[in-house]
Length: 486
Image (cartoon, rainbow, N blue to C red):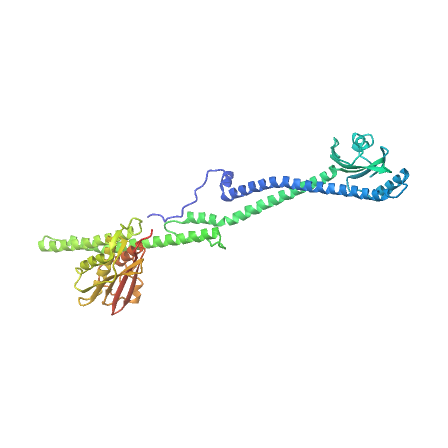
């Protein structure tokens, strides 16, 4: 006794855990996202630093220029007063430097007669104290001078200055210097840069963590797809992926996979039903043949009768097998052998063949002339099936009509009408199914005829329509395109 089929198990991996981790899709997405974030961050930090330093430098120079212009404007007003002396100049400078405090890291320095008179703040750094090289440059100034000096002292950095000579009664008596030391602003800006780096690093780390968790949640349907695919076996096709909310790619993937599994399950169920029905249909003639062969004796007449019965059953089995082969081939792309068919001539040929099927009142009705593209052999078999089917539901006095017409410029219609007993509404819904027979059917056929007609119509890109009323007859209409589009 064979054991029941089991679902395929997940194949264990011999790879280390870290290799498996690196091969995960969400890990690769996260690594790509990380590289992108690192790249953007490495570009952003220098840009931020440059913009910050540029803004600070612009502000410092604007403050320095404003302080200089304020002092010079006050000096020009003071200079207009007549009979000013050197003592008055000193008083003016004392008042200006005492009442106005410069911005941070700014210095106001005044030289009178090439000597340091006063500064604000009073304490001067060594790099520009009296006696320094820079101070000696200021002592030689006779016109407006601006400059930037880089000094060795790391606590100072660079010195920005603007120096203006001070004249009294046409004679230069002093120099006013507005000065800025850059290191203080630079250190404050570097603190801002470091704070920015720390903040953006924390944001990137947090975003990576959230991205990892989010990617895991987003990839859950794919993981579910993988697990579902592994759990599916020939005996269990019922597993499906849980629906994904929304209408994005993952939702489409889940819906597409579930729809695919529905089609596969329907195909398997149809195949299983087809095999079961085929086995049932073949079992009867095999049983009949075997039973008669077992009972055969030496009587020549009885042997002949048995032989004829066996041949008849074998012919029926052959027809059934041929029908099954046609249905199986109808799903293949090379099922049709296309050629150009003259519609009216083709219908006339069918009519000649139909009259040999049974004694009926046969009618031919051709309402259109033209050409179409199709498989002559398969169309002949489909229409003969319809004609043969009509003979099984009619009597010798009934009428069977074969006809054709063009429907517009893109479609042709063949029909088989009969005045027989008709088909009940319940049977109309099922007779195109494989191995289906009408409740009142008298034929000993396999029940594949109308299925074959339907399959041939679909292969041509067309369809079969049925209109029937019990007691008044039936009409089968085969609607086909004139040109087959593949």
